[in-house]
Image (cartoon, rainbow, N blue to C red):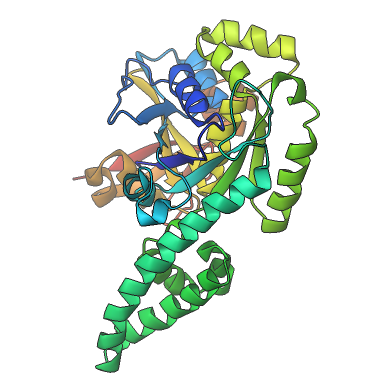
Amino acid sequence: MSLKCGIVGLPNVGKSTIFNALTRANAASANYPFCTIDPNVGVVEVPDVRLWKLAEAIKPKNIVPTYMEFVDIAGLVEGAHKGEGLGNKFLSHIRETHAIAHIVRCFDDPNIIHVKGKVDPLSDIKVIHLELLLADLESLDKQLQKLEKKAKGNDKEAKKRYEIGQRIFSLLEQEKMAREILPELSVEEVKIAKEFYLITLKPEIYILNVDEASIYQGNEWTKMVIEHAQKENTEYIILCGKIEEELSVLSREEQKEYLASLGVEQSGLEKMILASYRMLDLITFFTAGEPEVRAWTIKKGTNAKDAAGEIHSDISKGFIRAEVISYEDFEKYGSLQKAKEAGRMRLEGKDYIVQDGDICYFRFNV
């Protein structure tokens, strides 16, 4: 399952520092070599301690984590929707992502000049959001003009799409993000809304970039952004780009030691990756055996037949049953074999909803 998260922000907020630290610290292993698909795109591992505990018990020949793509989207300045800076390039890149990681500057540094002369995170957020809103208004307006003609010609499907589009357009005119309408829509209507490919429909997380002194308690700027995020019901995390940059050049063991010295278990970047994963409503299941222990990404609510299809379409087509052990039972009994002996392996049919952490073996016949 290919997943992309776009990293956005104004110039000099620490966007590139965080992106560079992210790709160096979490570059894919030899099983999936780190590759730069584009100068601005990096494939990074989704950290999951369960995968490594499984591997430690099974000692497979191969270990394959699950991955996300992070896209460092450049060129956003005021007027981006009109093509200012690298506006057109920015907008085309962000439309291709599934979620937005919005880097917000919450630090002061005289050596790093703020694009507007002073640190003002709420103003920065407003600039970014306004550009996205204006771009969506322009895009949606063009789409609605085409739909209106079809709707007047008694095209029922076009009429339905036009009505949903008009509701979203009205929201954008009020300077509200399109995603605010999602709770009001049915499952079918949400699907239609997503077909407009609007930027402001994508889930967003605020990444509050602070200095070393503010990493524990935050500061006046983080308090402002957190209050704003809570009003919006938007997720946020606090990290320090400089610390993450230092961590990125260390080995896994050295990173653990450094984090322990700071009194934390996870780096800010790990929190950022997992938060991005979570806000996309994703979960992980595992396949495990001596040849390979592997993590797989699926949407929450996916059934066993479709989950099997993530591995190979033939497994889904010839699905017979799934043999499932929960990760909790594996951890409790210390091995898959002992969990089986304790009667903890379940036989599930195609309609079983796969749970986060399930260890699955799919029986199939082609």
